[in-house]
Image (cartoon, rainbow, N blue to C red; front, side, top):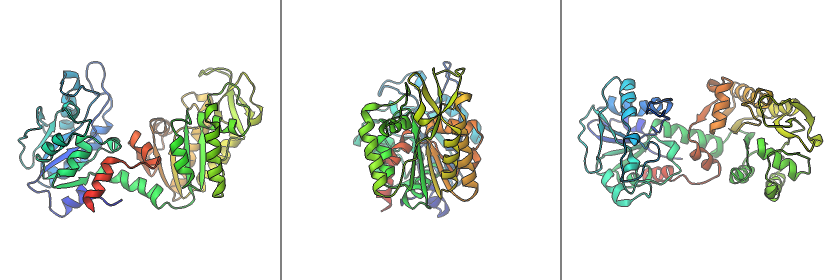
Length: 399
């Protein structure tokens, strides 16, 4: 994917004295008192802002926060806590500007934070009128918010059509590079692990990946439905029997291209969904009617580890068991270690999705995964093969 980048513009001296409008993702969690409880997204936004400031640009930054009602500003929707934290990270005051659509005063070498963009009428509907107004504020538009790339909104898509120059910030550029490397021209074998509670939420991903990967692995409730499709007893495990025909189509797609979908040969079961429930290892064809599958068994974990360690490229989305409960965490733990080891041996690994990131944090392998996507819905839609509007418009502007 070819897009212009902020770093390219900075290195060629095109930012000095220019008005730079940066769309960041500063949608951070807050407690009931409005205090920021986790600031990863704010810290991740700093490199783009510093690049523009260091190059002598007049910098405007905006983001959404929460779910405000357009045209109805409320104090709890304000980016004020973000402005304070951003100022601490940059080591300078970051003024917060309200009612900014019709004009912003900011000088070269200065930065301001523009109040919650989703308060503006027409933002979510990608209003052309709003987009044109915002574009007039800037000489250069920078999208550094991959987490919103799957949404066509005025600050993620519309403004990019009309700004004199539109480019990707470092976070967006890194996501584009990583995803393109994983799916566009991957080092083979390409292995994808797709897990989660429901086939229905990942069916499009499974269908898309089945056509591209050398090995597709499923886990969690998704694996249970595939086991059902293959005639295995799954007791009272979480599954979607009505999607068995769809699972069989995925299996047929893989079979037609000479690939297989390895299902668990053994599983860890319990009679209730509880962290204190006694765990039992059973062969996959011996699950009892009153049991539920909560993890893959040791033999399956060993086999999965071998598949992952032999990969050239790994895409990981979802844990293979209820890793939050220690008795049912070993499968995901072994998977995490295999991904880390494969990466250390030269494989390219990309991981995404909230539960996946939680597992990576739990097992301390964050520095041993090639790229961790924080995109959430955008990451999943990319895996589905969908066109992401915010990236598509940047590609059009670079053509």
